[in-house]
Length: 179
Figure (cartoon, rainbow, N blue to C red):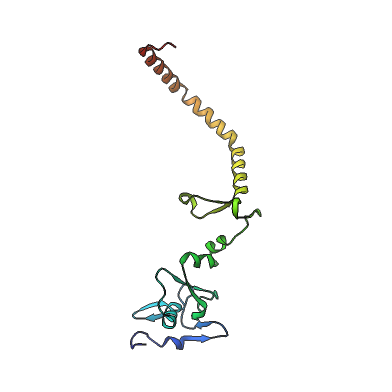
């Protein structure tokens, strides 16, 4: 350690338990330990990992295998992609990505899995059986409404359609087509 890199020796701020190394200094708002290093605050687990194991590979982030955010034990940290880290987590992305059954008990695997197009809801997974049931239900509940909308449109546009028919007939007569 070069002089001036740390405000204090970082290894005096670690409380070693049977498995985890708990960062005893203040955590940030996300619950991760933080350390003042080279003029700014950084996540403690990243700095300790870099000191003991070397640089974190480009494009990867550290995943806490022990799920303890204040743990800085490099054996509990694994460099992974952001997507893998989210899938392993306890947030909405991780919980939903790990589901294998829909809310009605159908399997979310193989032919029964429907993925939403990226422009609609990227990564959203549905069960084919439930999707078909939802479509059927929507058609049935909206059948009368659609009929009514069609009747209204037909009544509103009746005069315009009749005028178009007359115009087409007149054009055909000019061309010499017998009706």
